[in-house]
Image (tube, rainbow, N blue to C red):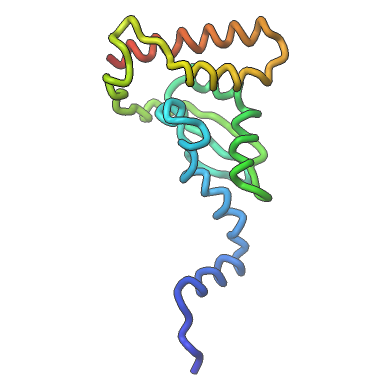
Length: 157
């Protein structure tokens, strides 16, 4: 008779034999997604499935798909920083209108029509745009982002 083993050691052995370690590391993205992208993005975009080393992200509409696609390289870098040694090679986006979320806390925002993204949000988005070399394109994207955020916020209220 063999000595009883703990469930943890049995699972570790199974994971090693099946070579699932890499897959489990990649699936950690579901745990830290909001930390990496922020609450605002996480409200409208969520990781949905992993195929190989490609992460599929469900987004609420084509506007968010386009916005995140423009930030794809930055997102990929941020996600892979959290997954040393076994990161993603690509991000793909798909529209999923089922992602409807509860509206944000009304006290967090000003009255309808007067709302502006917080200074932190604006700085974070400008930082994300720093990867784009052309200043005119950066400014146009920032204005577009600002307008979309304002319209979306007003639609929710």
